[in-house]
Amino acid sequence: MENINLPKRKSTRLKEYDYSSTGVYFVTVCVKDRKALLSKIVGEGLRALPQTQLANIGLKVKDAIEYIDTQYQYISIDNYVIMPNHIHLLVRYEPPTGGHGDPPLQDVIARLKSFTTHQYGKTLWQRSFIDHIIRNERDYIEHYTYIENNHLKWELDDLY
Image (tube, rainbow, N blue to C red; front, side, top):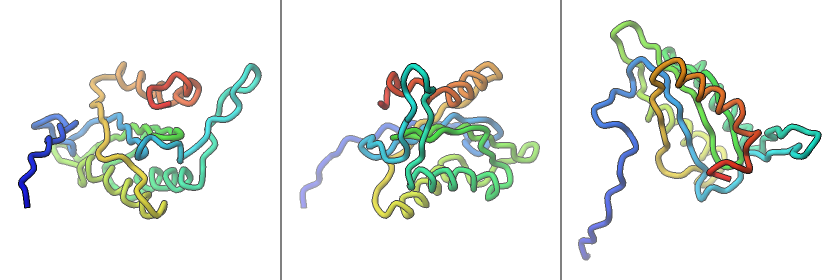
């Protein structure tokens, strides 16, 4: 068999950063091929504000996200939104002083993706996820507000 040199995927994680340390992370996970499977944005127009209407698999994703708060002692979800073809999460790690959360962020997201893919019955998510380390209160407020308003700007979204 021929040895084919495939290009290596560039990691989206920061090298040398401990993703199980205290902090808040803004996470985006996209549906495979960006298919609008999770929800619909309804009520657009002059009189009605857009709202998110979850599909069956979107409801499973919601349950899985909310389960994280009860499953992991030092991890909580501060805010989230389920868009038609992606989700955004604000994930907070608060392990004991000087300690580390277990599991690290990438494992939490992998478990979320694995569980919901199993519920869906076939590949649901794109490989990996995008994260941003929240740096200060202003950064936190901007990302929290972005999640709150994401469905209002769906037609302008990069993932639309």
